[in-house]
Image (cartoon, rainbow, N blue to C red; front, side, top):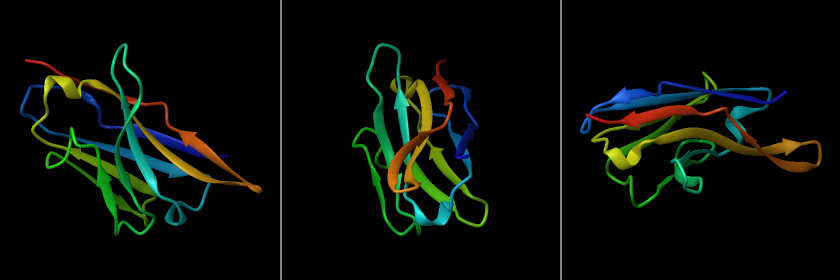
Length: 120
């Protein structure tokens, strides 16, 4: 079955950096785009970054452009989110997500999330 397991979250001071990882299993990772989302307390889940299946195309939310970088290693079935110049407003639970075929349907799969807290 499909599994997405995030790691790398934690507590960091403003201006600091973290790298999140998401290890995927149960599907052909190299065929599908991957996304990072985040959800802050009392806010809707928002799309942070997207990477194509080959890694050749990436897109970012305006709020993280120039600070965050999404990448992937298809040999390791892993997608990363490098987060630099972190701000208090980046505090959220971060989720990786993909939309992959399950039989004849496209299904959204989510990880369990990893907490990122940016605080002095």
